[in-house]
Length: 292
Image 1: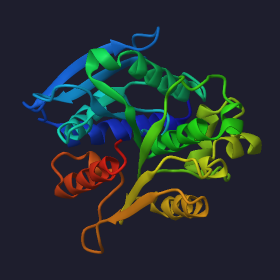
Image 2 (image 1 turned 90 degrees about the vertical axis):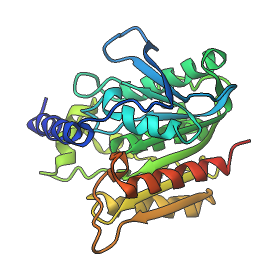
Image 3 (image 1 turned 180 degrees about the vertical axis):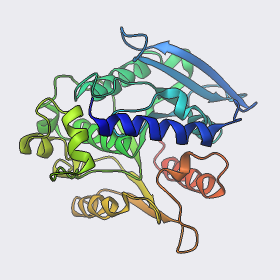
């Protein structure tokens, strides 16, 4: 593991522990925890959250967490995901295999397995598989965008060692503070991360392969994309929006914060933030527009 990945793991964990200190499961949430979706109990487990008192099948949000491809698990995203369930969705929150212990596309293979699990267990957990949304932030937004391309671009899908579950159709995407075009110039943080993530260490062909902007078509799912005034990845958003416009993909884009309110990277995961609550309301409102 590179020193960059080690530092990111320490830094992100410290921040997440402070952010979530004292939070508990909301009283209006029913949760099903630590359900295996694969053979590895450490890496391949998921939770399902539902609003209490809501019978029948609910539209589904699947969340793929961020963390620079090298950090994170479902526990770090449980409070954010439960807040989305409070807005009337069934939410699937999962842990996936991280780099450098596992190379790309291991995390996407896991996401794909989660969607297979979702389709197979729809009746048991009240999941409306006609309305399935995928969200991700930061590196999770990168992977969500890539998976959106895999689901809608057959030629691109053929370059991956797995097949999308039969019957899966993504109704929409939520891409938060994402990275899409990765900088692998000498000395960059991302170059070290790609060395940990990719089998070839970030060769030019690999970088073109994992850049979702190269593979978006007009079939790409409707997308709610956002960043913030203090987000260190905010310059990535215009590149995504340009590709969505070029391909006539329905989308909404929001920049949160202003000159005096410099909201930071993945601010929406802070359950004590009024700005985060407003952002999450808007994302769920966007999704409802496409529920069939």
